[in-house]
Image (cartoon, rainbow, N blue to C red; front, side, top):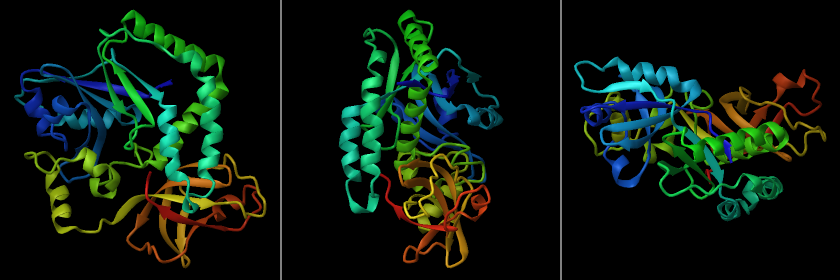
Length: 346
């Protein structure tokens, strides 16, 4: 259990539904039918301004959950076309999002990693979540039925972790829960660090992408293919940035880049301990040619799991290598390249 680094934007008023429907890639009407929904917010040229999850708070009132480092660009883009519209858009500071691991579900999902292609990831994961399951028991909280909140899967793949978003953090039982978590994080920093690591590992394994980690203002939705089905509705009406999304989808065009999951084994790197090394920004090579870049990563034993951006030059039939030349100078004694492979997210 941990408090998410989220901010909330409230859109409310008689025209809130109509306005949002023209601004987001998701069908706003589905938020009322089947719960919270992920959505992109695009610029007119089809590139991303934000990636949000939309919650319905009240009638004609919606909350958009956004990462703190994506707040400004999202707010700026949302208010850009707010002209002669009966809707207000403001930062909403009364909500709080708490993520809760489902350890029973984690065990089920982890079984998908029990194959040769995933190497020793399953065993390395078990070592982390088995310990955390016991360590986090003091944080278990029972909430009364009448506390207003919404629940959604933290990741694209369900059954691992769930976000509970409370619309009013000042309610005593909610504020007590927040204080309890913050106190635990302060008193148990190493456990909290492991909690965040486990969250990051599953975020990468499921390719649940984030702004300023894998997504940016130059990214177009088709590059994040793992999010398209959950964030873009191709049956709704017009929205800002729709032309590029629809054109690429209709033509089944190959995007200039695509974001994929990759696994690299470093067990044969001259027995060098690389735990904690940061590979973000390291190039991916095929036949001495750069075909991609590491966007985010986590080390798990002798493995590095990474979200990578691959160019059209990438050939799935050729060997893919992690070019470690940039960090060899830091004192790591290892081969300059480490072989890896692209996998399907779990």
